[in-house]
Length: 219
Image 1: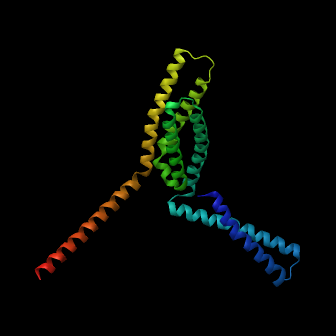
Image 2: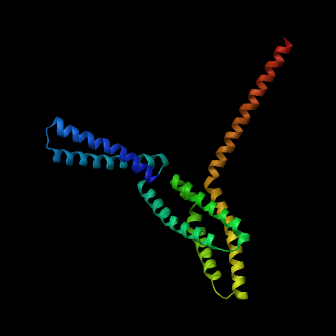
Image 3: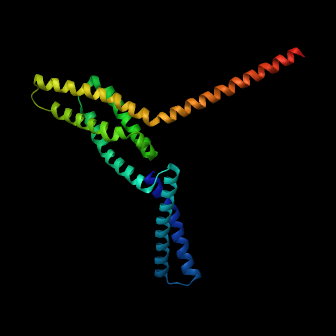
């Protein structure tokens, strides 16, 4: 649920309601100006709150989630947002140019997973391995690499550790890409199904036209 858009929509509903109630209270019921203002503002606040509750209820129903499930997912996504910020900052702070392309791809994949699960919270369950394992490992490795590479004196052991960390991050990228595939696997299966249906329809249409042409030739 886009919080900003939801806030704008609720405000667009609540503001006219507040003004309308104020006008009715002042002109129709002959209330004082201050009291009419209080009534109007109160009506706007109630409308804002009720519209928010209705929108959230519809959102949860559309995605097949209970309030408890959504609260659990939202909590984990909030935590993940901070981790992703740290991860992306660390990855872009690494000064190893040959691995830049891979690091940018890593960032893109992690952002894609987050955006998909933010937009459709139920997908979170398909990405639990990413949120509870791979993301934490990536943050720890990237930040450790940045820390070690910033040391003033580079020893053989330190260089070996940095190479090993880069290799591990590369391997982790493959796992995260698999996490993304798991998140969209159902969409891929659905696409294949729709392609098969379309191919069958095209084949049926072609056979019908062929039979029609043969019938006309026979006549």
